Image (cartoon, rainbow, N blue to C red; front, side, top):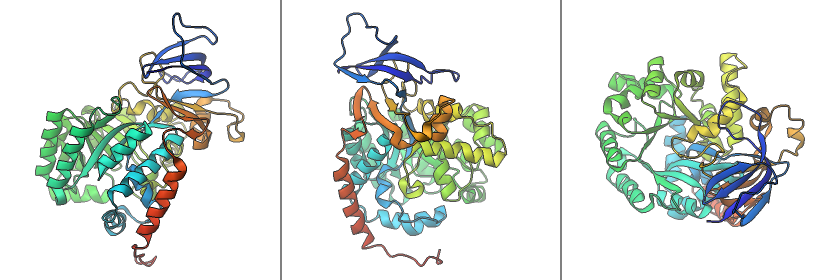
Length: 437
């Protein structure tokens, strides 16, 4: 691996309480941060192979997108303004039956290009044809926890694909790629199948990635069918005996929150899709005050439209401030921690800038009207920064975008290909009258 020197950047370390950034040089070796040292000094017996001049730029840890369906970029805008159940059953699932392996590959590449431009360096993704997502991830150079979504209606086939993904892709990409098992949700997977996943996850030593307590209707039906909330139902089945990444967690009782914290469930908070689908506002203050592990996710572009972590941070903050009539919580630093360190359980070594950490870094150009003046760096990063302000992205010590140019993805070719494939899908799409929803 090459040695990289990032010279003169303003380093936002995210290693502890909110504090002023450091202006230092930063050395990277073998994909890890080697040292931070005074600008202009030299490390003894260390010579970089490449130097990036970061003078005037902000350098911070890359973002972790802890719940995504990257390939759903190809369905962006196809089914807007529907509630979740109808959105899935009447629009998205029928459309997905027409997607080919190549559609998923190109859609995933487009999603990864968009994520890199938003400063996302790692993602937890759940989809079908997951090996095509893995192929795109390996080419793009991002860090990823991948899974094949599992459904009882096609259990044997989907489970076999999920296990094959683990066998073929675990540890690929110089260790950047890992694999989870992903039962879609408690309401799409039967209790015996959920128990089987728990057993397999324990045997393989992998986490479970699942949608959980996303809508009020889901909770009501779970109480009706099982006499338990979805969280209590998974606890009874023993799923929390292995590491679990639970997406959404919108409708939680106080006892659910306590159980999630006690079982160290990793919650992926998806405020944009939760709001757009009318699913509700998650109890983020209760989760954080309980000590639960919380990170942020964009969900798929079919439900959130943009894979934008800056917008996700803002939405996470603004919704809570409005819902609780409390402008003080969460503050900008807490929101930035959710986007960086929040995913460190899934991506060990990521989320902070300190010697020994993964060299997953983003360089932001603050020389913008909307970033001027900057009274507080955390306020600027969370409330004012946009994806186009991300200038350079480094993952595992490898530069994947430099001076706004993607180096691992032919962006123009991907856009052309996805447009062509989306047009083919649209020719078969039967649009329902607007009021027949």
